Image (cartoon, rainbow, N blue to C red; front, side, top):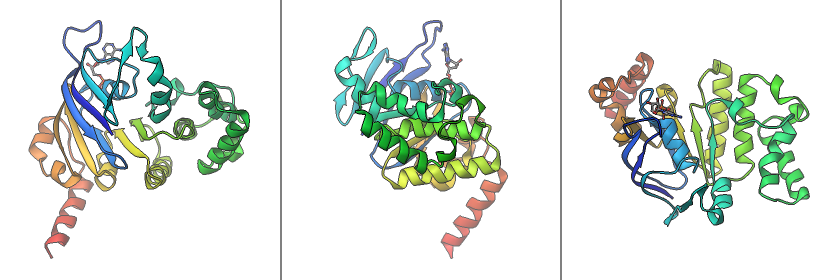
Length: 261
Ligand code: ADP
C-alpha cells in the first residue's frame, strides 16, 4: 500500500540525516506500531509518510505510484488525493484543531476538499455519533479536555475516510480511562478496514494490538516482526533503551507457557 524505498531526510539546520536510508512496506488493513527511543526519527517518518516533508533521496510509493513533488511539496494532481487518503494525527492536538467549535472543526477538511454541503452535513452528523461527540457539537474546542481533543483530532482525520491512519503517540498524557477509550476507538477503526500505523512508547498496548512492529533507531528500521518476534529480542531492545515493562514480561511469559501446554 505504502512503500518507502531508501529514504533519506536531513533537516536544513542539521549535518546528519534524521532519516537515514529507511525502507519499509505497509500492507492494507494491518495494524502497525513504530517504536524507538526519543530522537530516533519516528515523527519525521510520519511527516514524510503524510507528505508534509519531502525526502532528499529515495522514493515513496502509494499503491505502486511514486509520489512526485514540486517546489511547494506534493505535486498538485496528487495532493488532494494524498491529503484525503493518508491521515496524520499529531501528538499534540493543539497543532491540529483549527476551528472554534467541534462541529466546525469536523467540517473544515471536507470544505477544503470541495465536498458538497449536504454531504458535509451528513458526514459530520455520522462522525459526531461514531466518536461520541454529539453532546459537544457546539462546544468551544479550546475548552475540551485533552482526551476529548485527541478524540476530535482522530475524528477530523477519519471524517475524510482515509485509507491509512497515522498517529503520533496517541496514548501520551492520557489518564487510564481516556487511554482505554482511545484504544477502543482504534479497535473500531481497524475493524472497519482502515490501515493504522502508530508511533508510540506504549509497549504494553501494542503487544496485544499490533500485527507488526517496526523498531526504529537512528533513522532506520533496526528490527521488525510480529510482537512476539520483536519482544523476544530483549537484549537488542534494551540496547536501544527500550525497556519492556515488567507486567508485559509477565504476560509474555504466561502466554508462551500456555502455548507450550
Ligand atoms: P522521535 O519522534 O523518534 O522522537 P523526531 O523525528 O522527532 O524523533 O526527531 C529526530 C531527530 O530530528 C532529533 O534529533 C530531533 O532533534 C531532530 N528534529 C526534529 N524536528 C526537527 C526540526 N524541525 N528541525 C531540526 N531538527 C529536528
